[in-house]
Image (cartoon, rainbow, N blue to C red; front, side, top):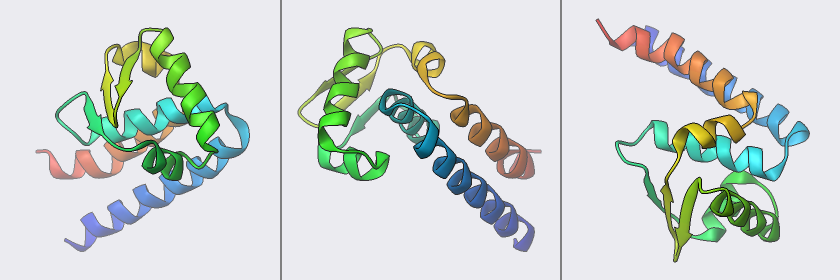
Length: 119
């Protein structure tokens, strides 16, 4: 159990560090894509129910930026968004539009956590 907790802690630190880099270097669209993908990786569905305020808090940008990013992603056919309901329509497109930070965090999580709990 201790080994698993240490792996989880290392994964969390890697994610936090990568988020700091991402917040300094990437566009709001890219950050929103990264955040959505990381959330969806932990769920068995392509749907989220969240208010704009909650997304603003999680992504760490102004509300106007999040609204513009949702609009851009919706126009690109990657997701639908209405009344706090987000449905990802094109996950591969979302991954392509995300910054490299998503892949870094995903690989680190798989390496440290998922490889430790799967036989």
